[in-house]
Length: 504
View 1 (cartoon, rainbow, N blue to C red):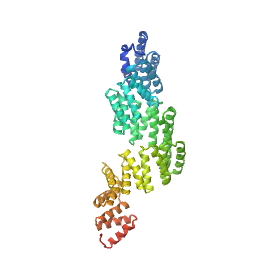
View 2 (cartoon, rainbow, N blue to C red; view 1 turned 45 degrees about the horizontal axis):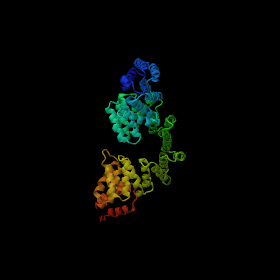
View 3 (cartoon, rainbow, N blue to C red; view 1 turned 180 degrees about the vertical axis):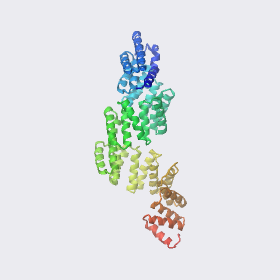
View 4 (cartoon, helix red, strand yellow; view 1 turned 90 degrees about the vertical axis):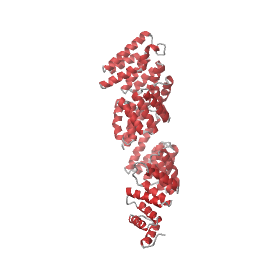
């Protein structure tokens, strides 16, 4: 560790509130007799001097001897262990400190313990966080710990409030990491990234800050930037289960599911009681199978996913992946039950809802059956324009024209929208509603983005027919015919108009 790192550790150690209150706590649990207390104080000072001189091993030796007699030294030992990425020894030291201390000092020990346990993927983190807030309801570290706990419980709004409180109270990098975690849980990726970056700025080697930033980078399409951050975190803290879990997800995002399996397996082995870590191994195997689909090995992927489904019948991820593999095989009959099961197991999984709706709409031509799941997908991810576009198409084909126009207009009016599909479906909905001018405007915009679209040309021809505009009808009808569009009624009318028959 570089010299500035030792000094940073020293600053953290000196700042511990428990050490400034030695004389006030003689009657508290964990206070030693006067002679022992003096020895502990001497040990603490000696440890600080050794850290400043770069002798961290020596400082740890001194603190380990003192920790057996006094919780304040144990707390200091935990901070030092954690700063070196030694998570298991840090957990032991914080537990020892919490057993010997009371009040604010106990709350800090338990809060720090909960945060490390969380990074280590330990189930006890929740109980430690609750104990910390009970020991010191207003303490910074208990507040940080309980903010993490609230995220795990699905209470992201409360977690944000708690984390902001910790930041305002001077919680530094750890509080910023808790805020980033809470904002990420709310889906505020920009806010989460800003908080994590503030945390990394304050503590470049901070574990939670680094892992959190990597998670946001992956979620926002920058997985390649996340990988070196995680490698550094793992090198510094080999026991950081959360780092291995995130590294596996990053490698999946980079199309290297086979490489990800090693990271996921390590995380699962180190955190046997962490359901997320165990599930990640399945997630990686799913990703590996889907990569095979992308490489044209669809039958092999279906075989592997079928076996994985039989081993994990309650995994929505496996059912979803098998459904997608069956879609790739153009087997709607096999895909639908898998996707229905995925939706049953995880009704808030937007991708599962979307895929089920997509199959109904595009493979079964069952627009009415597609409206429900596609509407659910949009409700779960309102900012996903592809979900909303297909939802609009299903509404249009199901005859819910006003609703289709409403949904598709939301897409086309989105700032920066540059696609053609939503304009095409919007034009089709307006055409069916006999709003021909509006249909022409939408279809022209669709063709401007994607020229030579036979369906758009045909719809445009019918729109001009509705306007009794023979020239427009002939121009776009002929273009649709040239592009190979099949519509006997359109071309029968076109032949008559081209022969001079007026549009009536």
